[in-house]
Image 1 (cartoon, rainbow, N blue to C red):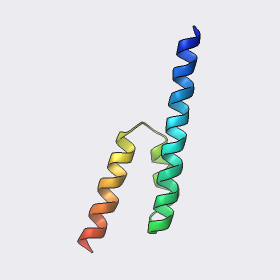
Image 2 (tube, rainbow, N blue to C red):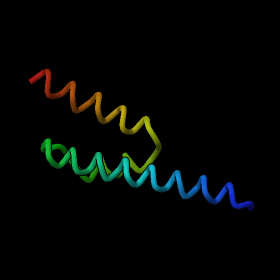
Image 3 (cartoon, one colour):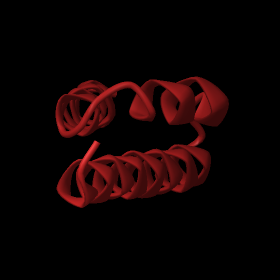
Length: 63
């Protein structure tokens, strides 16, 4: 493997971890299931974040 591929893996890991951490803390603030959302945030970038934002924001508007 060359050095460029390692940087891509490191960048992807940083993006996944930071996304999962933000989703976890935001879900905890909003009273959602923070562990579930945080684990889902580790799956992929950025679709987990988009799904989280759509579900939690729509849920608040319907109440």
